[in-house]
Image 1 (cartoon, one colour):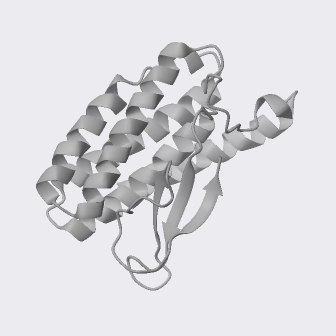
Image 2: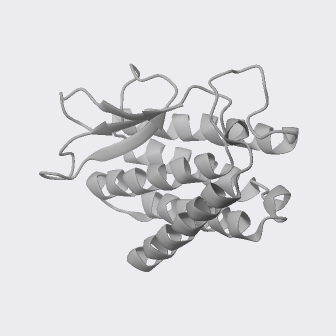
Length: 190
């Protein structure tokens, strides 16, 4: 079921990127900014507030994973799930391709978050967090969220050789959700 969802998400995101490349009139409007004094989603303070709240809850979830206490992880995942379900994306309904891509990313985030809550083993919870983080990253990029200086970090070989764990952070020096002494790599920063 996850593979189907991920493949569908990949196809929609690929179509979105191709359409953006051909339909983009002014690339400067679409490039991310690290400035914190402007709205992340231009002209929509409600979406900005919801995304800010969503990220605060996500960072709390990451913090719980850093300490590896399953009950706290599940509690923070429930809070994150509520924020995610409250995220209103109607503002993007005018662009059906973008709206569909964002909707799929949101649904994938919800599915992975539910897996974090339901998975009995901490390793399984971490794998779901890795997948959730990638879906959230795609959602934030699709809506051009640029308000905070976020980084996508990756710790190599977390799930075996060649299988890294990824997560988003506003503070790359903060404890990460995956065990190991390796220093995480910054895969993307915006």
